[in-house]
Structures are given as C-alpha cells and as structure tokens.
Amino acid sequence: MKRKTPTPHDALFRRFLTHAETAREFLEIYLPPALQAVCNLSSLKLESGSFVEENLKAHISDMLYSLETTTGKGYVYCVVEHQSTENKMMAFRMLRYSVSAMQQHISQGHDTLPLVIPVLFYHGSVTPYPYSMNWLECFDLPEQARALYTGDFPLIDLTVMPDSEIMTHRRVALMELVLKHARQRDMLEWLKELVYLLSLDCYTDEQLRTAFHYLVQVGNTSDPERFIRGLAEQAPHHEGILMTLAQQFEQKGRQEGRQEGRQEGRQEAIQQMVRTMLTNGADHETIMKLTGLSAEELANIIH
Image (cartoon, rainbow, N blue to C red):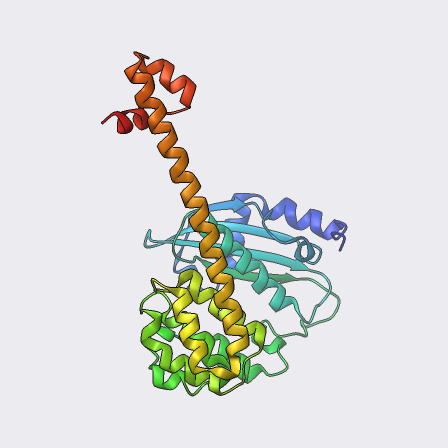
C-alpha cells in the first residue's frame, strides 16, 4: 500500500505541533485531567514515528511525544493524530500505533510498558465526529471483546495441571503429557500412561512420529531404543510405526558410535605421534605446527 500523499492539512498540523511549546500548550488544553496529572509536560520531547508499520503509515499522520511522569517513575507517550475525513476503524488504528510505540519502548531495554495516550484531532466536514473512540466498539461482538481484552487472557499452565486431568483430553493429551514431563521424569516411569493414550487410537502416524522423536531428543532416559521397543510391545496396534522408530534410533546410535570411535582413534594417533616426536627431541613449537594442536591441548597430552 502506498503512503498517503501529504496534504495542506498535514503541513499546517505538523508546522504547529512540531514546535515544543505549542505542543505542550496543546496537551495542556486537551489532555483529560486524570491523564495530565501523571504527565510532566515540561519534559515533552518530539519522537520519531519511524517504527510504525508501512500499511499503517498510509492512514496516519502522526505526532509522537515522550514525557516523564510526575512521579519520576516510568514514561508516558502521547500520540496526536489529525483527521479531515472520518473513519470507522480509526480507534483501532490508533491502538495499533500505540502498541507500536510500546514495542519500541521495550526494544530500547525497558522492562515495563509505558502509558501511551492516543488523541484524535478532527476537522472534517461531517459534524459531529460520527464514530466511537472506543476501539472495542469496532468489534462485531463488543461486549465479548470488552470482557476478553480488559481481563486476564486465558492461560493453559501444564506445570500445575494434574496428570489425571490431562489424561481426559484425548486428542491433545499426548502432546500435553510429553511437553509436561519429557525433561523432568524418566520416560519409563510414565509408560503406562502412554500405552493408555495409544489405545485410544486417536492420533495420526505423523503426530506419533513427531511426539516420540521429541521424546527421544529431549526426554530423560538412558536407553531410548529400549523405551520405544517396550512401548511397542504393550501397544501392538501401533507396533509397526514404533518398531520403525526403534530401528531408526538404533541405526543412529550405531552411526554415532562409529563416529565417536573414529574420533577416539584419531586422538590416540595424535597422542602417539606427539610422544614419538618428544622422544626424538622435537620442541613444542614444531609439534604444534605439525599436529595443529594448541598449547593447551599439547600440555594435556604431555601431562
């Protein structure tokens, strides 16, 4: 979307409100008393609005000010928009701008959100301004939106949810149980629960493969292959996919073992070479140059 072409309205608005004293007096006149009470207007500074997303810039001619609070704790921003044509979604757009200002504040290293006060300055031909300045009125279901966005968001906290409750969740229970316990408990301890969930026969093969790959990658067990084979024995309906996984893990283990063996062999060969060179009177500098060892690595071999 192309950015809005500047108009004479924009030029006039910006010429006045980029002047700090004018902006300060503007806010003294128009900020609601309760909000003005927390703003130290003498600290007002004009800020850049460059962080605003491009598609939002197409609709907004912005003035963004930062202010210290009257208590000296935290920050307040004030967004002043001017509009010559009414817009039904303007309250929502101003909210988006406010959230962008909050995000910039957090990105600068602050760990609490600032108060951002959006103000609309309207001078259009339709009078009075025909739309609500409450962004919640932009919803099809404003009452439900008000309840949702003025209260706590829904939280699913697996860390305090009893396993007995998780086990009733059928199609999402496997994901929840795995994410809750994979890093804390030995997987063999909750084999029974996994067998029960598999007996429900409500998971796709891809879901099972992903879940058990995750278990083996991050789970707490010394023998993942044994765990998968034990599960296959008790869940015969899924034996095919589980045994395939067990074979894949076994093959991976062999490959890793061979790689470790080769690495150990190389290390032993280098150590033997170092001892031989020392016996033949080679100095440390020559040994490091020929073997590629660091001084610390060479010292570890010698001692």
